Length: 82
Image (tube, rainbow, N blue to C red; front, side, top):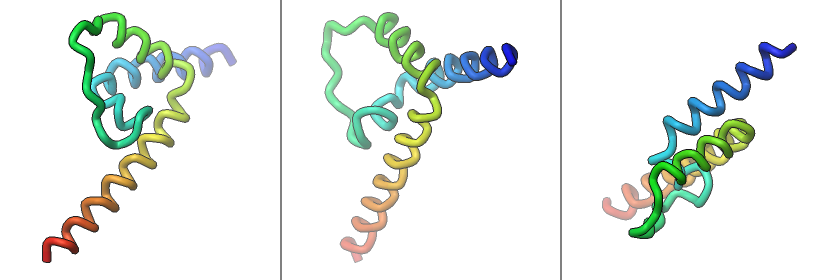
């Protein structure tokens, strides 16, 4: 049982570290917010990795929802451009 918990947490940490630059898709909607100029990159990356370590299944679901919204917007703009 412990190996499953370790794998869950390890996958979440890797997921968090690899998706840091795309965190706007997973948490704040499909549009990328303005980043503050004085933000700490290491602190932000660490916080994002910790959040994703425990909540990666929810982050994947919200990422899929944002991807669906972006695809829908892309289709709408393609139809409007015709």
